[in-house]
Length: 275
Ligand code: SAM
Image (cartoon, rainbow, N blue to C red; front, side, top):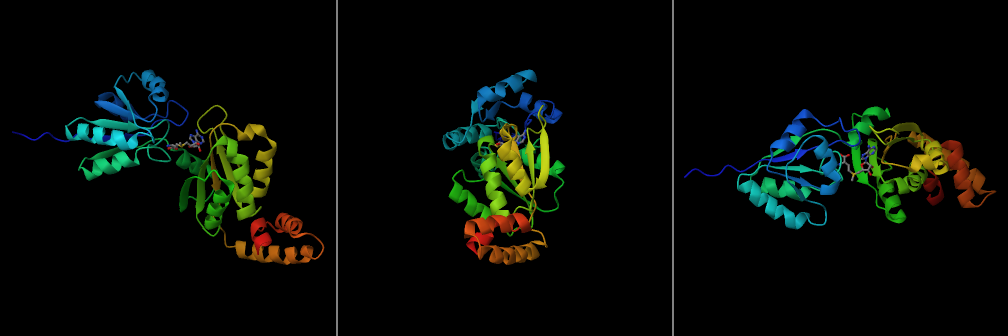
């Protein structure tokens, strides 16, 4: 008796905004598989209907991934092919799917990528920041103390930093980045990529944080924040920041002196204040 060939797990990227950013191969794959595992079936249905994809859907999200993975792996081992999609962009990139892909690979199932949109890469491609080396940090912790300590860990990294952020925290996060990385470090806010109100603003973090804090329109929609890595000039800037801080400190309270020294020299306010 011939053995059943295991099915394939297709990991398929969907658009991050513009519906046409959906490859012909992605559409064809989603039409031909036995089932599509989707993060939120209600969210994906309109897109799939638009492309006449009538394949049955099962939900696979962060709250049921553990339970659903076993059932999907059994179907794959039984010879059915399965596609994995998320609400937008590439599955597993700040989205569910890691457990499924890991379990499928452990069971000897071939996992096939069908690449496409990814907000981090789309943002990097237009940010004008060095793209030869970069680090994807996903979402920062939502609580301020944990967020600042994560930023602190990254302050010395020379690679371009890429963060996902939700619109209601973007102003807070940019203010923290300004304080930890310094006013002068270049930042880019890439909002609503591939959508009607697509905006990409690149300027020193001091200016970017102020602009976003003062403009509620910049706090809407979906966004990626990119920050230039620590440059070679940072040592000189920090030395100058310390010198100016020491002078101002003789006349002013430390918080005020650090704020002014940071604004004058571009050195990180947090570094001056905390020594
Ligand atoms: N898997 C997706 C990908 O490949 O980019 C990311 C999913 S994650 C849950 C959603 C976050 O991605 C948003 O909060 C935002 O930071 C970013 N994002 C998604 N679509 C975007 C867009 N059109 N413009 C800017 N950022 C976007």
